Length: 261
Ligand code: FPP
Image (cartoon, rainbow, N blue to C red):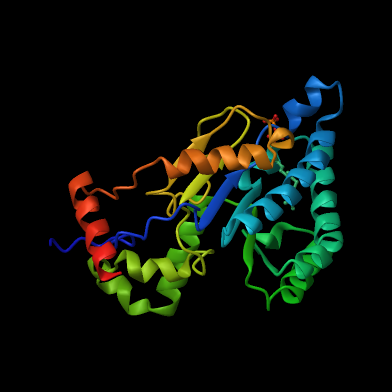
């Protein structure tokens, strides 16, 4: 085998349920506008979908659920919408944590949270600490997150930890970088879902989505319910994940695994 340096070398065990689901929750504003409501009403309803997804994924056996709540680019929105979203995040951190605790959910927030108000940062810290012992479902909220920021940040941290690498850049491998990514604790997503009709990755987990199955739906996030999640899982089950290999290689690997028992 050539000296290929890739974080996705092994053929992952094919499962019916994705281990890691990553979602771009899009369409809140349009959902509200269609109902002649202010855009922020869509964000408020979006929280109900978040609850439904946590329950749905948890019951289906998903281990990691990652939600893109606020991108680095979202600061460009009207000031009153940004301010509403910050207040909503604070309420979610304060009010949802007991429910998450009861359900065995571990919550983490990834992204450059240094830009948030101290009160929000503190509520994030407390929510993360209160759920740190849980491992039934790992829920990650990406907030003020961008995939390029994540990669660059990982690179900075790697060079800070191992400055000698700067003198020999060609020796740097994917495996050196990966532990410094914000979500180093999670496997790469198996299934990516974007609601709201756009077919873009929008700078979300661009490193980790390299081999992920991409599912796009026209449904707005507030309308994305457990039935819609089940449809996405059905679509996922029908995908053949080859990771650059041929179908015959996958069939041989599956037969060998079956023989091992
Ligand atoms: C995108 O819809 C949605 C957001 C930028 C905010 C998402 C936030 C929530 C669903 C609240 C949940 C909070 C937490 C902490 C999980 P959009 O406004 O871009 O919709 P549009 O494309 O129709 O305008």
